[in-house]
Image 1 (tube, rainbow, N blue to C red):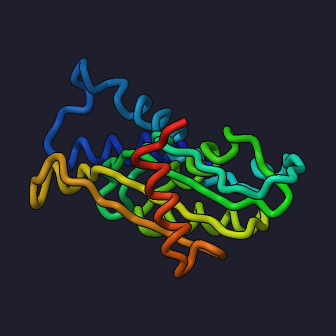
Image 2: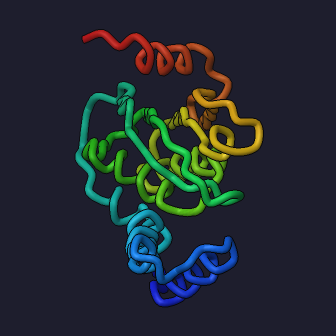
Length: 188
């Protein structure tokens, strides 16, 4: 749980450290605004996916399920700057499926923590494997990182892509190609 009092104090210290007047009209409420914002954007710190993925439905069909273009926002743990993009999640059921919103909620749990994209990709795949016990999982994240866009190398528009495969997707080029095809050129 975010300690809003400590966040407010830290932001006041930060404003002092960069030479700002924390009593200036535009900054008076900034520490409180940031404390409330951090409570929201780091809300995944107190959450796990077991409950989210616990509601399942039996199925006879064990064909690949793909949820694509799940928008996420996260914070780079190295610079505390945002990275954001799209998550694409697939799994091959093993007799059970989960509601589609639960995949998006799983992405959100891990996005709402100080993160690195590589770890987040693996955490999503591992949570789905653990909780659903599917035949396989594949997760791909595509994101733009503000730590590369507005500082350092300053390369706006560059995208980082990370992939995690578990179960039947590991070393199975045909399944992976099917996933990529459904993410890129999905046709009904």
